[in-house]
Amino acid sequence: MIKNKVTIIGLGYVGLPLAELIAKNELYDVHGFDLEKIDFPQASTDPTTINESEYIIVCVPTPVKDDKEPNLAPLESACKTVAAQLEKGQKIIIESTVNPGICEEVVLPILEESGLKGGTDFELSHCPERINPGDPKWNVSNIPRNIGSLSKEGNKVVADFYRSFVEAEITEMSCLKVAEATKVIENTFRDINIAYVNELAKSFDIMGIDLLEVIEGASNKPFSFMPHFPGCGVGGHCIPVDPYYLINRAKQAGFDHSFLKKAREINNSMPAYTVELLSKIKDLKDLNVALFGISYKANVADLRESPAHEIIKILEEKGAHVHKFDPHVPEQNEHPTLEETLDASDAVILCTFHDEFAALSAELLVKHGIKIVIDGRNCLNKEAITEAGIIYKGIGH
Ligand code: SAJ
Image 1 (cartoon, rainbow, N blue to C red):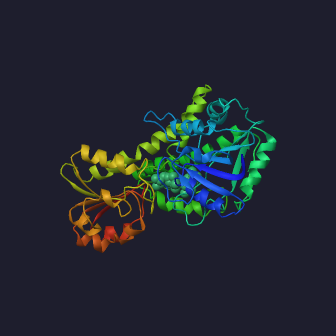
Image 2: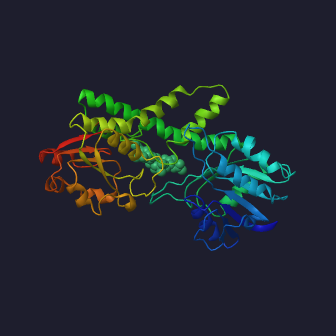
């Protein structure tokens, strides 16, 4: 084993910033292994790159399959690569989001096929990633981290390793399962709170109460209220995915998370609700609809689980002609510019509020003959658009 050799497996939006951060500490010789060619000095597609590393950090995707069961194939494959070279003294750290129990029930058996014993010959730790794509403030160097390991001593060693390159607090947790569960409940917390305001949006739309103003009002309570916002759906590789990890794990243990499942149902119903708002105003057959924002989050180019996919599918099933436009995903645009997209359309559905869409003023919409606006992120100027004679409908707004 080469002391202070570090290899990151998976140089994506989690692994690459981590590798770059660790490499800043001259103490470490940082390598990266990925199936793709990645722009990092010591990156390689050769798995033997990881050999003899003192620390191996696994940052591969852990998506869900169509049936919402966790897809652990990338993780299992990475663990097999690690097991092939495993030696005494190595510290194996899983950063990928997994449901509670996966490290001990899936990862550890693969590693112990090497004949070595986890917690004594080598250490197995879980340090859940907390990357927030597009966040200008919080990043891998300043976000606090939680770590759980097989052995208490090993946990301290790995926590001190993270302390040598992360400026924020590193918390040593009592075991792997607690560390795994911490990440899953962080994101499930967000999903249920978004579902809460999405259900409120449906009821307040019927009652004719502006939910956005109500949330803004509730937000000035200086304690114990945390605003979330209704929208056309919940996308990304974390929030709509992680709850299924907990739901599935608990089901195996014999518990039915009916509340978490209901929250997922509500959030998954928002794309259809958004299209319904438009269909109540105008028949969708042969309607030209500009669809602004295909990625799942503002100013991010990531399409994973984006609600826009479902909205486009429903619109097309109902005979509408969809004119997609997303400056961050230009290859999917039907027209080269925002203006040309507007010219081709009678109605607008805004799914993701990229900065570029601040240009969607009432004047511009009138100029290009837009008659209806469905604001899936409640971000456009409702008053000005309405005053300009355009029908505006937000989500609970
Ligand atoms: N969304 C709403 N209403 C809200 C907040 C979000 O509809 O009030 C939607 C967004 O439009 C998006 C989806 O939910 O489609 C997810 O949004 P997100 O802001 O949670 O973005 P993510 O998926 O990048 O979540 C990440 C997560 N980080 C990690 O998993 C390490 C999450 O834990 C963070 O809380 C989140 O960033 C964040 O706070 O921005």
